[in-house]
Length: 249
Image (tube, rainbow, N blue to C red; front, top):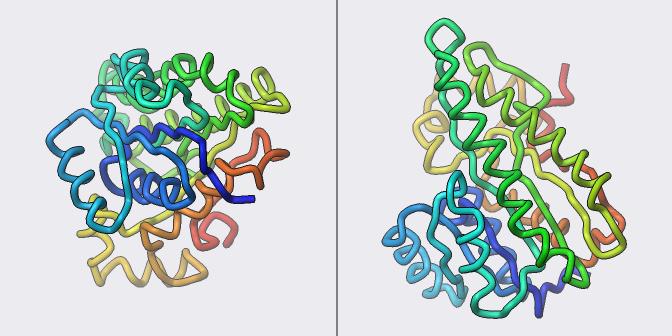
């Protein structure tokens, strides 16, 4: 039920952090996995690194904000097919409303929301041809819960959550599903300093029932599930992986 043998997956933002963990998991499940990022040298370094663990990853360089068609074309070059698009790109500008001008706000929306739509649209012809097409967005718990001073990212992820539902209704079929994963607080390299801050542990103890940050590899099973035959009747759903943070009052 979780076997991805014979499937080709493209993971945008797959060169590091949660994107990389999900890409590795899809490959371990038998999929042919292509990771995307803007820096080819960084992607090559990751490819070589994981090869040492017996994991094969291919590369499709490009910026999702401008190169959606080219990225998809590169991803399908090897197998001629694309069965899974896992869009894990996300950028953040933690300036509040007083400090963020409309152009900067629009830039975050373009990178985190419009680019996701562009990637989905570019991949759609291939996903429709697949016998089990999977479109998976990585949103955030910020899609439904806000923190002060983070308007652009919150708006973008909220929009992506809504886009997931919209495309699930519009595109969902017996052979194509659209779903999302909403991560909570994960101790990725980007969040390493925050995760190591003892002053934040009191907050974590109160707000996260499991009283810890998520380990990056703990996001991977949700991706494998949504990409696999096991999720054939799951459509328009967001799986929240946050240790219970968003359900605790």
